Image (cartoon, rainbow, N blue to C red; front, side):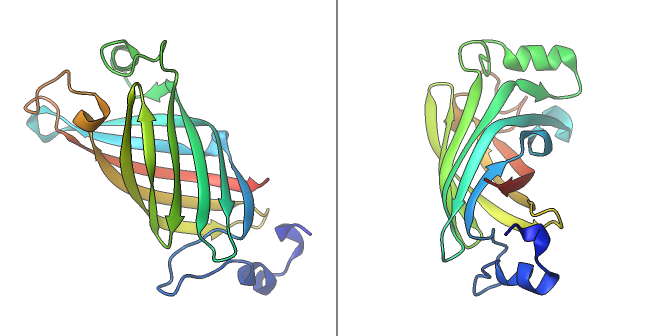
Length: 184
């Protein structure tokens, strides 16, 4: 039986609620919707401005165990989908000087979550670094899908993006994930 056939009360009971009210996914296997999932990265730049970069998901899956925790999460981002609002900047960021999208077309995240702590390893170019995000939302939709959100930060030097000085581009990159998943 799919979630869309359940009444609101029954649908809610399929969601495991963590002791402190942390948003969680229903139990089972999930597919991340590439058309509705983005990763936004805010890059601090000279004169306290920020550049917003958006990457789209190429593919992703998640498995949620009986305790309501995401026991496996595997997401592949598409480097060529990077969008800053400036085609010139996009080409530069996709070039060999930064992401090297021709040689490394994807950025992979593999991890798991306990409560609202989403932790794992980010593979970008030839670097693999730990990253931790905080889940801020996991809400059921009437069609059986779940919308979700998470945020965190990463140091650009840890992932090999150190071509510019800290004076021009800040080191800490704010990461926000917003997306949608549906049962596998």
